[in-house]
Length: 423
Image (cartoon, rainbow, N blue to C red; front, top):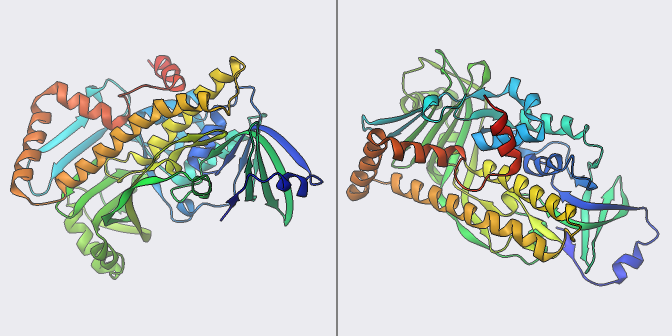
């Protein structure tokens, strides 16, 4: 784990090593880190991205995501969406249901007057497109595989000691941006504390190919043990996210394929005919985590380094994309005003923007999961009343949909430009 020090002898001990200077250095070359870096293409800022591994864990496990409308507009504003779009699948309908209740809330495109309600894409598709687009960003240097060894925060800069090909080098940067995940070593060594908890649940994920067309429909089915989601992908693939208590999730994961498919068919339903398992199954823990602060002098956290939420509603990675666009916007504006982009005064503009919005989503997903993941009669009655209201009160339905697709709250300029360009 990288260690932090403020001792000046660190600089003198590596002063003879090659030195590279950047305005911003991003640690973490995953989806959120690359989104942030590419958002700075026209900024005039010199950016470095440090990534320790060639392939991410999410890519190796075939992860897939719901890319909400706001995120797709951020990618359009950056200019990378056209590289992604041929390999992502639109969501034309979202169906919410509660256990065995016959009530179904159906959200469709005319509810928002948009071409889709969101999109679904594999991790590798998004990552490859961002890496390809990065090559079109002359102001961004991508360093991989490079390991961050040590950080030294000084008043005017951060000095990073990194290891590449067994050799130590030093990078001097005005601002360090941590996009290094939920267990962020940078956040830890900076002494930034988090609040939150591990849920009693875990998620089993797999790719499924149904016999019939998925018709670009996403499902969120709430069960007492946890939500069950079906996301439509290209080539008539579906991604399932099956939430269950941890012990049960491990048991589901370890079932023989035939037994797994029998259990899955019961949960999935017969609306798409017989199901075929494609690839391996994986299980992921579920947690809620929020950093007590997003910034310190010369340091900003984005994505999972700043927050993690329950996967219900598919909000997690979209919050990170929004962080990336917001921080980029704040820094570009400060740079144009010739302000110090690493100063706490500038960085707190980003924190004020994103902190409350992220807390709102964290609270929403937590309450949604706890409200629907039980059989306590008063809550069963209350939540089914809520679904009834959404079905019959258009205003409530549209508000709930806008929250899910990211159209509530302050929108980054990148997304606003993309929205205005749409027919």
